[in-house]
Length: 229
Ligand SMILES: C[S@@+](CC[C@H](N)C(=O)[O-])C[C@H]1O[C@@H](n2cnc3c(N)ncnc32)[C@H](O)[C@@H]1O
Image (tube, rainbow, N blue to C red; front, top):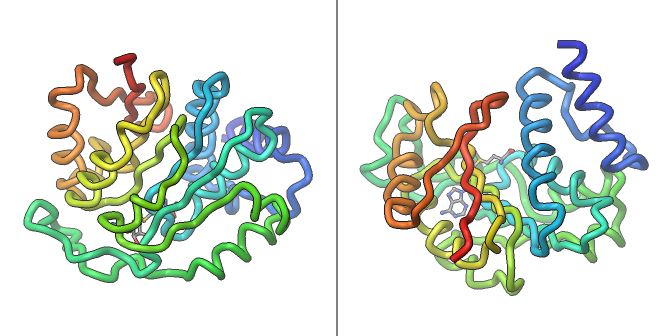
């Protein structure tokens, strides 16, 4: 365990040495494993052009991981964060589960508070203004405000069936060949029980794409590497 924490600390330090605050909150096992997963996946796109896009900001844990990894990346990239900042929309029948998600769940913070949080971590106002874009709104309306033309890293952490459908349909075509699409919820323990709609939407979407989600053995998370057309 200690080795794992040390590895994560070292990775954060080398990605962003001048940050003021730790980006891996408390270095718990869960977040350490998650940070190291994103670091491994990020390594795969370092040679590719394209933006970093996260749909589903929540409390911002993974968004700050991605910001940290992009901070000293020599390839200039914009980091886009999409969220309603009002929590979930109305779930659909596909989301019925013991978790019983409800409209408004995950309503945690505002864009301005979150922006302040990111700058205070040490990324600074100037860097954040030039590199980070938050788009507030439900994906059905907000994804059209993605004005970049290519995505290298697409992290989807949106829990619900319709949210996975909308984000995949709206952004998959913008992902460059070799780019990664990561799903926070797929076939992983309680996630599948709590969010069955996520797996259903992902499986339906990739059924005709000639590629299926692969499992990262260390974290148990699933991702797709976009094949060449
Ligand atoms: C599990 S949280 C994300 C957690 C986050 N990645 C973290 O590290 O804290 C899911 C987020 O997805 C957002 N969300 C889900 N469906 C959405 C939709 N259709 N439009 C906009 N935001 C949505 C919710 O507002 C919530 O913030």
